[in-house]
Amino acid sequence: MQTKKLALTGAAALCALALVAPPAQAGPPAKTVTVTVMGTSDLHANVLNWDYFKDGAYTDSQGNAVGLAKVSSLVNRIRAERGADRTLLFDSGDTIQGTPLAYYYAKVEPITETGRTHPMAKAMNAIGYDAVTLGNHEFNYGLPLLATWIKQMKAPVLGANAVRDRTGLPAYQPFVIKTMKVKGDKPIKVGVLGLTNPGVAIWDKANVEGRLRFTDLVDTARKWVPVIRGLGADVVVVTAHAGDSGLSSYGGDLPVENASAMVAEQVPGIDAVLFGHAHNEVAQRFVTNKATGEQVLLTEPSKWGQRLSVLDFQLAKQRGRWTVTGKSATTLNTNTVAEDPKIVRLLKPQHDTTIGYVNKVVAQSAQELPATESPYKDTPILDYIQHVQVETVKKALPDNTLPVLSIAAPFSRSAVFPAGDIRVRDVAGLYVYDNTLLAVKLTGAQIKDYLEYSAKYFNQLAPGAPVDPATLTNANNTPDYNYDQLSGVSYDIDVAKPAGQRIADLSYEGAPLPADKEFVVAINNYRQSGGGSFPHVTTAPVLYNAQVEIRQALIEYATAQGTIDPADFAASNWKLTRDGQPLF
Image 1 (cartoon, one colour):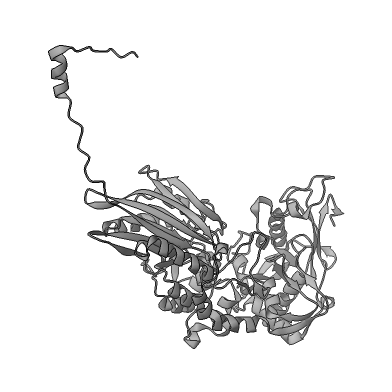
Image 2 (cartoon, rainbow, N blue to C red):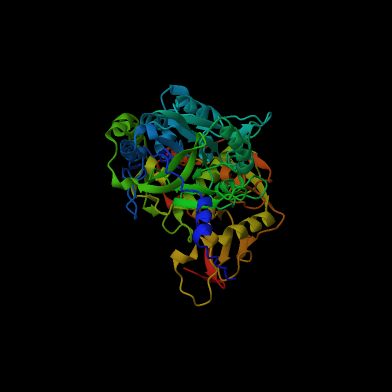
């Protein structure tokens, strides 16, 4: 379309000019303030840069460091640069479980009995956290220990969607609003809403069933964000112990596990989400809120104190109130700083006590037993787990007449029982999770289904293709801990076949496994409660559940026997094949 030009001359032009408003006089620039939020997640009781399983400073192939002592140094630097009155420090959960340090003060000298301060409370209080959100692993050691830790924390511990089973009322503080003074102006209020993971209902069923329920993250945020805004929050941050994929590792019976991006997309009024649970590093990601079109900032600071997320919010005064006009985030690597000597000194007594505990000799091993090949070969070190689980269940069920089988997964490829002295840390390095032992009843047909489901862990291998262990496993991103091996029966896994058609020559005592034959199966609580979504086990009759920790059972069995000799327990009962021929 062409625009017609209108020519004005003389008096007409003067009249037209008189109608044009003069340019507005530039007033004083709007007052702006930058607020910085620092964030950690999935610390998993890493305080110092130490690997208790290796009994040495933490190292990995990427050069990462771990621990709150490193985090503290970065926090001190940011506070010095930005001003302590303009910074806040939050955490998104999984704090009090994950290292022998945490185990020692939960089980060996539990803080519920000694009255001592939990090492994570001691460190986080010293660093000066402003709010901490519950992760699913906070519930591993039971509600009494969790309550004790919360009392010891100076920062509020949040969990808006953990509600009382009977009343539906919040069991923990839902949110907190932090106020920052601004010289000569009204203060800035930063609200933080804490959301934990619905999977707790499955993973720690024994600890929470009948006591707590875990509501949907989106619904819970929809309820509380308007409340936080209504109380005058100028900035709203959600700290969520949930990944951002929108997927769940369990079935659809519970609210979505990894719902952080969904919260950002579906709930108006949120400026940023500091999330965790997935152990990933996400420096900065923006999600568009579907209702408002506003950009919501997301960030995830990896795990174990390897990274610190730093979120900057620019605020300007508009119509008498502070408004977020810009935001950004980055992650800082803790391997760039030394440990804060204050935190090192403060935690040294508990650290040294833990080192003494993990170096206690419990048995002698007749030979070196590595776990390197456990994900794709039947190894004696995993057979040791199976053996102890079977013996523990048999002892607990003296009147049982059914055969006892056992399920175990390769939790660590780096674990090894050295020849000679076996220490607590060697066993703990093999069984890195705080699972408890159960026994359920399954039929032969159910066991077949279970093994087929487990075998989807392997990528399909074409005829003649090279056998590379590096690409053979973890199909569809299935982690090692979701590949279960079964002892007590014999079977092959044919990786030339598609998933669901791989189990061959399944037999018991040399004969094909009868579909209707019943077995007692030793299994851990994570699996039995639905972790990994394996078939049949969540509804199978439970024959044994004495809350015995499997790692402790391994330690106590080794101590009682005095020796670990594969000749006593190793049994090659499964193997990988391709078109019926052994793969290795």
